[in-house]
Image (cartoon, rainbow, N blue to C red; front, side):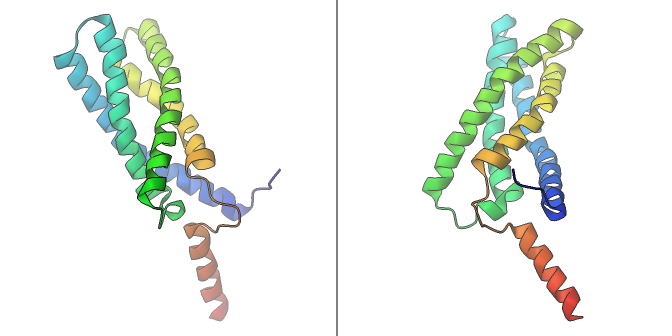
Length: 166
């Protein structure tokens, strides 16, 4: 098992913080689309509590993938051809869709337990599954190649070298 160094732990924590911050874009998209669908497009139990969350979730996937690939994991995606990026999106969508099968029961549980609005219950379910999504991104979709140095590690090495030279 690989031992975590201080820098590795710091980089992982920083990446988790970025993921949490930039996931707000997807959460806002999810919430807005869910509200629009459940208020104006669909009615009834299935329309409001199953179909609307599914549509909003897929819209949020696109936003989250863009932010993850361009901001959170940008050091692992530079100079990646569009074809590879498309494959990563398909894998990303598959992993997030599998997470949806955790979100939906959580959403329904929160709603049955609390009788809160579907939008509030969806936000709670998204919070619970956010950590699962981060680890899937970090270890599967945007994993670093063996021997590859991350952008954060390069910056730290350059800073340490500059300090030694002073």
